[in-house]
Length: 207
Image 1 (spheres, rainbow, N blue to C red):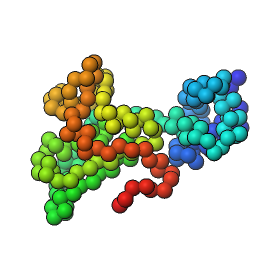
Image 2: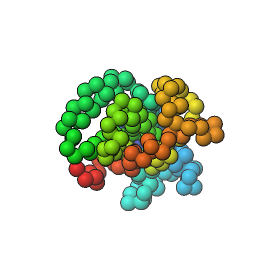
Image 3: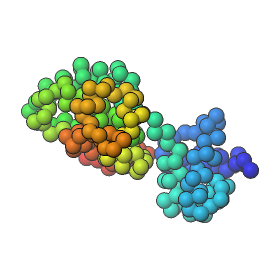
Image 4: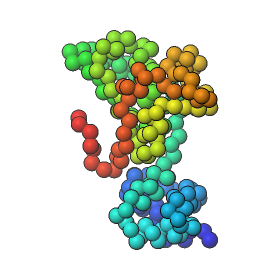
């Protein structure tokens, strides 16, 4: 039986409150397909029962699991080239001058999904700005999903994922084989600080 309008409205409101993710009417079908695995993982047969459980236990961790299940997690290496061109040609050269005394650089990637964006930034820094090797550099990669944060920390990607946007020369320079997959080299992983942050909550990181 399809979800009733009142059930869909309840789920949409909960998801928006917990994550800021607004589910439009043409995405209603995602509520069923994305949330049935959540329902079954706690022994429920369907999303109707999940809604009832959410109403019964609003203070459990279930609302966060529902919000996480509705995230898109779409990303790739060097996705949209213009921001990375701007970073290489304008932003980093300017920061090199402004931060020359402190030799410290901090970059934040919000909603970083499985980590391709922060790793792209890390590779750009290492390939074009050798002087940063002696700096204190940290790339803060944050996401709502614990699963995506873990993937970023591991830095392991499938052949299909590295084929999406990552030039072969950079792949060989910055990654090493891990069975049928590729793992980022330690010098990249150690400058990436991946953690779960919900942007609808208070900012937990120091300025």
